[in-house]
Image (cartoon, rainbow, N blue to C red; front, side, top):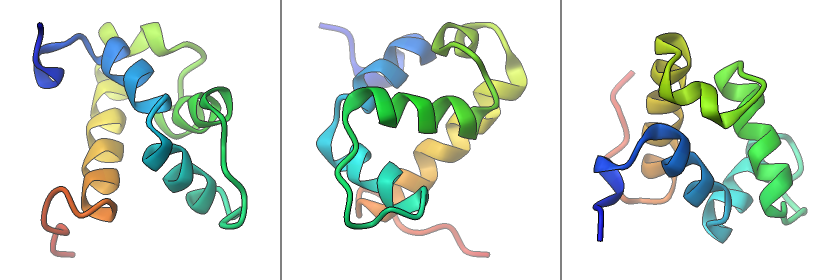
Length: 87
């Protein structure tokens, strides 16, 4: 089994969008804290945030990869998985 961090970014994004905790995070970040996003709504949030039309672009677009890395860090901090970055 491949570790999450060793998977291609597009695969990581697909897994993330199916994570109920990420779905809640995406809803809150979209200004809908009382809504539970489904996987497709979370995917749309991710595409908008990373400025892409398809998650496949995460495997080849370096700007999208940077946006995705920042999104993952923000989500991980929100979820308590890592310490919050200092601003």
